[in-house]
Image 1: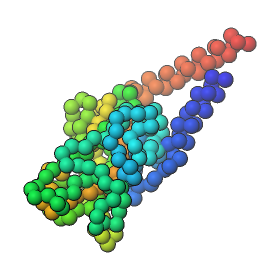
Image 2: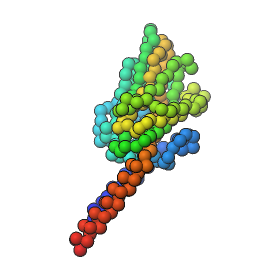
Image 3: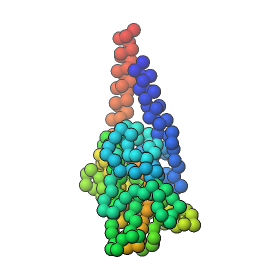
Image 4: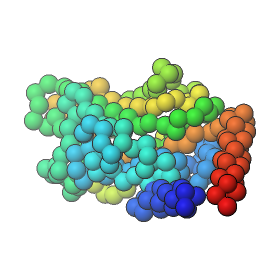
Length: 246
């Protein structure tokens, strides 16, 4: 009975991860170093239909589609934070989109700034590497508005490698898509992806329409061996209990 419950729980975790599966335009395993495949260990898709800012909860951050195999038990401590003039908009005047986050300074008299922080927890095992893949859609009043990505982690380390694609137009209104990849060493307890808008001029704006993130932990050989030994131990324990019960 116990083995059935464990198997059923694992199956539910995997199925729930893929229930609302959203594909990447560019899949990480096709373009940068990546170990696993879809739906990935962590796979979170914010389309901002609702305000994503809230404290940790069992359901994760509001409006996010959790799709990864580990999301069902890691999402409870995820959160999103705004800083400066960053805000959520159910709709934006003059743009044909609904549900966006960003900085709208079209009625402002001076330049302003803002940031959004995506906090993600990790699988609590010692691993050598952490890969992060981002695909985001955005629109800006000017190509000269600066945008800074910052990836930090619980160990205080910065990425040891990173890559960004060129932007690709999605429609005639100016919506753009871009992919980014980061590698952290070692895998931290958590990481935070920060999008900073240090200078949005008066009469300007910058909005994010979608933010899609996948992450994976790459185990060290020693960690993989320990995991295998642990699995054999569980099998031995289950067999011993079954013999005693008989």
